Amino acid sequence: MTLLTAWAYLTLAAAPEPRAQALVVPYQSLGVDVSTVSSLSEGLRQSVESMKLDVLPPSVSDTVARSATMCGEDSACLSTIGQRSGVRYVLAFGVGKVGASLLVSALFVDVKTGQELGRSQRRVPEAMPEWSLVARSLADEVVKLPVEPVVVQVPVEVSKPVKPHTFRPWAFVTLGIAAAMGIVSATIGLVAWGNYANLQKSPGDTRLRETQPALNFSADICLVLSALTGAGSIIFFILDGNEKPVAVTE
Image (cartoon, rainbow, N blue to C red; front, top):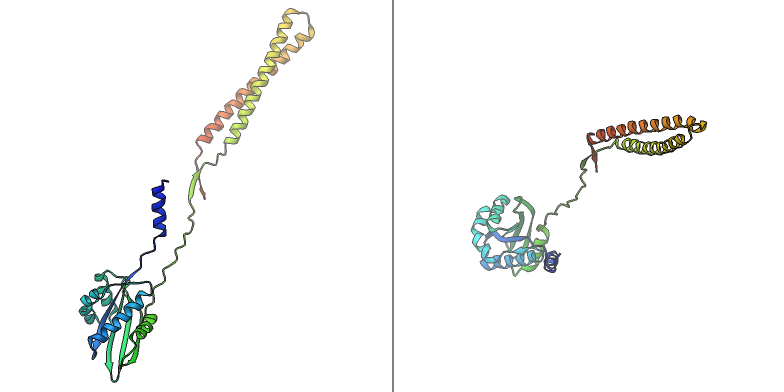
């Protein structure tokens, strides 16, 4: 790994994850002035910003305010506005005058699913309400971010074809026997050849004459056994090569 690649990898690993975007927009304002709506909107924006969400600027909210008014409290309709604005969440609010107080309501919509995640309302005095406190109280209650599912990687069993090699041990055993018999046959053959040479020098030696047939027979028997076990070894190697593999789970 080069230094440039390592630096890029560390930079990407240390970079913070991008925050989801949200749109704060009014869907209703009855009997109140524009400053009231603006104050409540700004309070909600600041509250949402502190909840690890990026809020679109007021200019975007002003652009879609009329569409939000037509949607009202329809979460599916509000999620459509959120999709057009390119956000993940929509916090829609309404404020209206009821007698000597103001009724403030808010709902939080997940644009991805079109579902309403939270809803609440507050009744506040009309005379100089603390919009920052009202906004914080509403945001804490309705802004409920969905919990991301934890992905657990489960090891997958993989079946790998493997040859059992049933005949391979027999192939090596018979090959070893064939080699041993060949060595014994060659050794006895050398002894028989030496005995025969001595017999040629001393034709009357009874011991040498009686020993020669036994040596010849032993050498021949060992040679035959070496040939048979060698042929058996070849057969076992052929069977091992043609053996079908079986599936083994890892």
